[in-house]
Length: 352
Image (cartoon, rainbow, N blue to C red; front, side, top):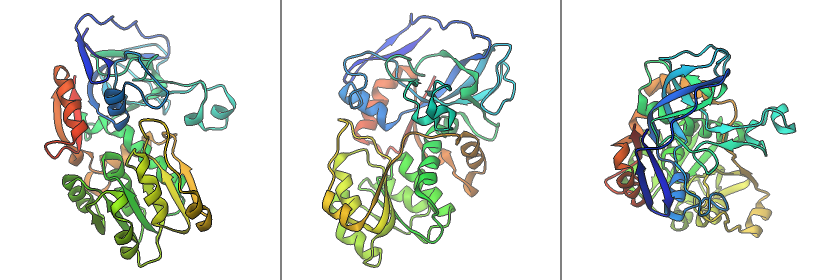
């Protein structure tokens, strides 16, 4: 079968003789991949060949935001809600595979499992291929009202939902979102739905800033985070924001996130810096008594993500974010365009 392999920084190779997947075990399914989203972490792999200390120098088939159609199922294949799976069912796939046996899994924090594997990182090739076999419990059925491209965006919507859960009660809160890429936009939309009294976006890319306005931002500052501190404080009424979501996946965004936070605020670290380190302004964070909360993927959010996506404009209209679609063989062009945010790109999807 065909697969797109990342051999090193900015070096893809289309392999037409990629090994066929094994038949599914008793509680597994084989999925014919239909749509794959390009994530910011995929861009780190593409540009630098690794994410922090993961994957350095190792070839991999990327792709962890994906959906597809089941083409074979084991006799005990049941999805994440316990429903029987059969060929023909469209599913979104949770790429994080916990051990389900350790202390953290037993208490429900499967996203913190230290023994996990992850689809799309070295050790488990991802979805930029025609088929893959996965655990059935990692699958969630998609209704016909959610298209293939939107189905691939359910995974990052789950991450956004988890970030909101960790942030606490949003009702009446002032919120700032730094970085209005796909996950930042989802967080912004969810904050509006959750009753925040003010939602501000900070995004220097014009197309994404405009989408933030369409999705409910009260104000959008079209500048880099480092250049927006004074204006952000002004629009917060001089008090700062109760919640700041850092979604820019870049180290320099953290100090301004701290600067615009109100005393006692929570700063949610959602973005993933490529090098694995960041800069912390310790004194202002300590003096304000801030809580810095690292968002680790998601847990138990897929059913709610599917429900929100199925509501369209009354929930989270994922199709609005999909600005570019490419066939598998044009994956290198898709990643290159995404890396430079060309052609007003918000979200790119690869159709297999």
